[in-house]
Length: 450
Image (cartoon, rainbow, N blue to C red; front, side, top):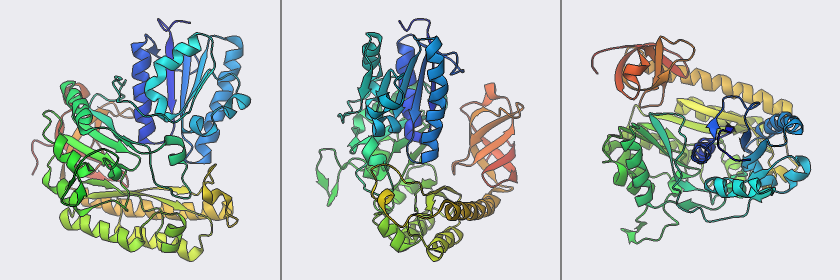
């Protein structure tokens, strides 16, 4: 099989890191001559970029692959690839379960896709899950947006949270150099992108593995330094970053966000639980009191900042009282958004082996209760936008109402208003908010910020 005139489809599960990896792999395939297909059941090459953070996402990919393996019986030239975290976790064992797979590749190998496929085209069945140094990436991603772009700044994670499979599947922390990151963002600006989101599994760890001198008792390469270093790039109007870890989140970083006008007033800082004993069992390295101090510091410098987070309910041994401390933290802080999940035991993680697992009934009940509270607090937080004029960076047409465009406020609220996408895509538009829902806003375009 040769790539020319062949089609490909990528289905992505999971986090922003996976989405960024999929864009890079799509770019490689298009450089090889493949054409994008919207339909995974007519494409000549199908790639599933998988997530193993929860069992449900993992089971879904096996279901999808089952349908593709039946296709392959009639079409032996179909190329089937499993990439991402399930591929890394299961490795060669996947071939016993799904012998029809042509290529199994972990996240660290995303920019090696062309080399690996050449081996497949030569007749090999390839498994690429060995740890490697992620060489500086010169691939050109096929980006899903023409306005906003992901930029990886650090791969991997050195934390050892007892519930989390990420360090096992994404490897140790590897920071890109500030120069390489700046060069990528300059190129994005040249192509007309207006917003970048700096990505890392634990972005506050950025730079600590880079060689460099210590300045005033701290390492000279930090996320804060990186923000100052890239801030002046012409053409980029907004900068975001995710995901932060409370253990490393500093007042210096918050101050930088107030001093740098392009950095958006939005912080994503997962807390996972509001109970100190559960946080200790999770090996998170902070207390709920420290987490609350972080929130207080953000609000001291930026009273209107949006704060979003992640929380896990039903962790092994979690009592009703401990769960209620999580609810209390959410009610007290008033988050703009909380991504919630019921605890799901993952392979090769300590917590999966503990005897004090909770029943699915208890986990589901707690998930429903926390989601109800999250929606309530989000509605309350959204209320502050009503009748205000917000700067909205327009990204796309609203697929459900083609008279409308959609974009996001600096605080990351999705916002809809009437307008022509061809005129407005990539522009920052003042919008007076007329309707505030839990997780999105609607408004009218106005002539200026009041």
